[in-house]
Length: 170
Image (tube, rainbow, N blue to C red; front, side):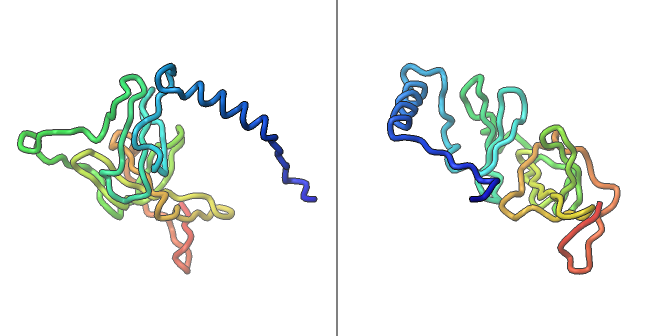
């Protein structure tokens, strides 16, 4: 038997008891816990502000990114605006630029893959550790939408790429 594998066994009675307890907690009439509409198909969640989460599906479209407030129970973004009154927004970031972003209170280097100037959102594919001091880009479906306020800034220089064009040093 493998030493690093732990076998977990639950009896049918334990499952029934757990299901019953969870059904009581998630009962819509009696519970203070509310599910958030539209989050079941989401791929990525992140804390944006206290009591606000950002979530996105696996789509590259910024319209599939939304922010939800646990305090109000409402969608905080995308904001519905009158397009005739609001002028198109601009952003300091462009597709293909190397940038630094804040994620889980840490700085990460990544490349801008998409920009939504209307909502001030920038989609970034970050570098993740590979081996030694080499890094690789996240998978395409792991690119994350960031608010412009979450951007630390542009990188002073591009990360150096290896000969095969697969790994980076920064």
